[in-house]
Length: 81
Image (tube, rainbow, N blue to C red; front, side, top):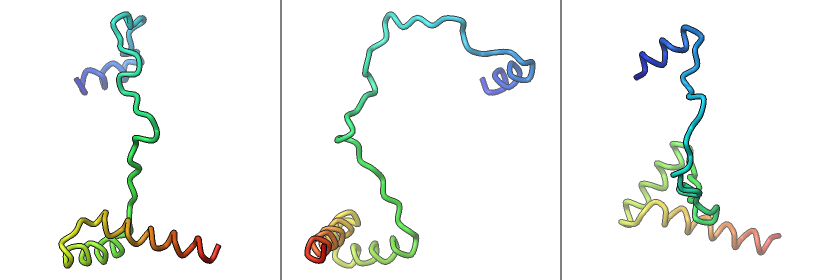
C-alpha cells in the first residue's frame, strides 16, 4: 500500500476518490465529550523517577502520588492566594 501511494504521489496523481459515499456513516461515532478526556501529563525524567520510586516504596500507583502532591499544592495556593 505504501509503495502504491508513493508511486501515485511521485507521478503527481491524487489518491483521493472524486466522491465518497457517507450514506451509511454514523455521525459522532468517535466523538467524546471533553469532560471525559484524560489529558496526559508528561513529567521530566528526573521528576518521574523520583516520584515513581516513592510510589514503589509505598506500593501505590504513581498517579495517586502525583494527585496527592498536586492537591496539597492546590490547598497551599488557596491559602496564600
